Image (tube, rainbow, N blue to C red; front, side, top):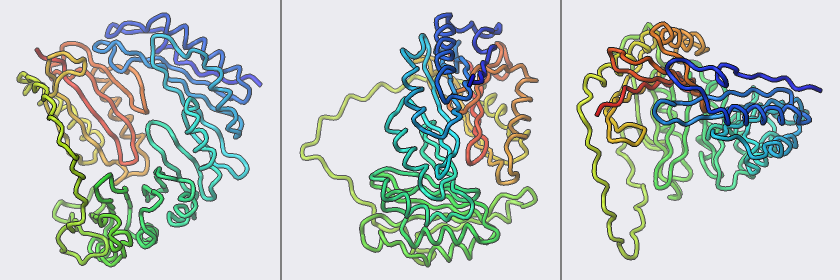
Length: 420
């Protein structure tokens, strides 16, 4: 068959007065790669784009190539990898492959350049209860089929995890699972809480090295849910093999709820509410002989960018207002990303849109539409994040912004011009 081709022509050949065109060598190599991938047996569609996250400052270009297979056979990954040749010229290659579900196998999205990820995806997609497998953008998660509990899925994945991690997700739950954590009692409690009326989110992350795991539950029944977790057994903590899991239970966001109605209870799984933090975090191992401390780098000398910081903060707060969901904006002065001695203001905000709506597309479109009306233009896309650039001479000093949809809402950042 003839594979479909999606080519972002504007990104490859056009430019605006704000930025120079991509290098001709990059354009030619991306087109050549697209032609090779289209010819691969089992490929249904190839979408390519060439963009720069910030060409005015870094000069870096990224070639995004998304391949969609028509076959569920992951052997197509090796064929795609074999068609890469020397990759692309004068640009970084960002490649993804999406294969559909098959008989007894879930769909998968991965980077075919990483053979180990292909092998992991092939094993994970055969686990009963897996609806889709994702090994891309630095994440490793599996969306579960309706009716599959986290406890069931964890038992099925653990024999093949080794020392790795998989994040199991459904509409309410996102749980990081390792070979040993969370324990059986907490997994059962998570499934029970996910099925409980009034619970809108359950999020669990395993403990980092020398740290403790954390669990967050969003619900209208804060105190009763906290009591459930306080009464849940933490097997590893009781055995002394891991720090006790911390939990936070808080009210889910509602547009008609006042701040006086918001509640939050924190505690430790398996300990009575109000208990102090357990003294169970292991102490780091002291080296046999202390090494000479390295000479510290001289701290960067930051110039005053208070005006730009205020502009960045106001810009992000306007995005929050457009979304209509309260969120906290942070802004600070930092050294410029180009490595120079200049200073810029940077800011970020995570807007929890899913606390009030099921789909983030409407606020996403409203925010980017407001940016376009203000003179911003798209400047690229990487790792699922859309980058926008402003024209010179904005009164607020904002030079660029980015937006990305995440499992927690809309992640937005903004940067000012560099000041010397």
